[in-house]
Length: 484
Image: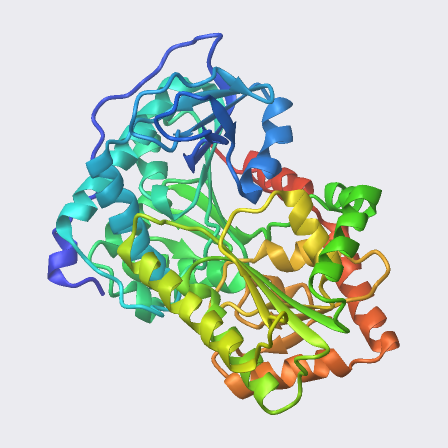
């Protein structure tokens, strides 16, 4: 039962509706926090470049074929003239001021929602002024969509920064079909209940016709919460609310398999892989971690485990080496700056303890790498270590698997990554269990060729069966089947 304070809270009411026909309006609108392009360098006026991330590659082809429009923030509060299109996709910018960015993005999205949705690994912070800005910015997105989507069109909204938009848009444009996909985990009831604005978030999401999650458990968490904290009734997969039917389901995202296979077969990239291995000293075994720099990824725990394997002799400084790529993330956030400092200190201590003159046991890269270079690193890696404390999916694991055309390579994977449900051939670990990580790395290092081939073959077949285009098409097909 709702507490009295929650009962008195009303969802945001949007009074003004947008209607009318306009040939310039889009039949399909994709909405994300960010546009698929970003300034080449902020304030330089040097033009635009593609934004990093799997969402761009996943949705480009879909929009190209459907008179599509992408709405999002351009990545800067400074005025720079946005290109009208990217790869044949029309673009529309939502302006966010520097202060709004701090409150909406760094604040509510990433200091309130992000930790709460990732098992509260770090305590979430609740500030009313963050929430007020989150509401204001979400309404700005909803208004931009309402002005841009064709009558009877389809809107696909993405991720935790925009959870109020579905209901706001439904009030503005009840004629359109609305889908929402959450790329990160959705927490269990006992965690979500901590959120002071839990009812408003649920109301926002329930404005969609279809709500998608990475794994069935997240979908179940949401449906149970909706039935508990709203007047919705139904099952984990179908909810009924005020005469509307809302479908809820799991749509695990994937990677562009053909693109990765093509790159992995490219002679230049394969030659680069040989060069990298030579630069590493031609070790017998290369361990690789590739992560966005974030406390949810378990990078320091992983490095501690590898360090102890060097200490106890399971790994040899003469034969084994680790490479850790930490992609810069939210660098204006002081919490992430501390995370970087702590990680770099752990790397330094490991090299100081076990390195030799001219021989480093862990190579650390804090930079964005071109995808060609990343594929070369995947080809070099004998063991890929993906050990997040919690992850919606984790596409790095799938990317690595798709580069291993010769079925070599072994994957150590957190059981708390969404990818664990599909990549059953991995050496599974509890990322909180330091000894368990060490045991899994030992097992992977000692696995014979046949075991490694069998495991990798299973994972490649599973990943190849449903690639990123299947993901996008399956979600949109399910959305089209929903009632208006």
